[in-house]
Length: 112
Image (cartoon, rainbow, N blue to C red):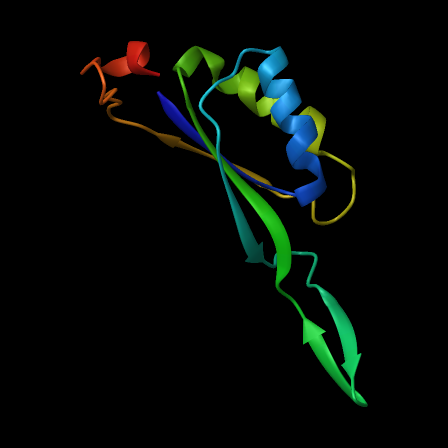
């Protein structure tokens, strides 16, 4: 099992959710975050003072998938979230040791 984490543009969340439903990728967690990478934000002017606004709103998604679904999940995220501009985001993949469904006690891939 792998944990796939992605930081994406906020406007890409709904199309990504639709794509996950289409490809039967389940178990999505979403969080609104602020961050800055290569995009570096923008300069705002307030009362004659320039202020660098480098914390940009992004969406962080987390999804745990079976090993055989990792590449498909990454491909869906890349296809939907890519605009070709700076600020499209990043994808991180981490190993997951165990998954346990609280309701039934099932473990491993069946608990996903």
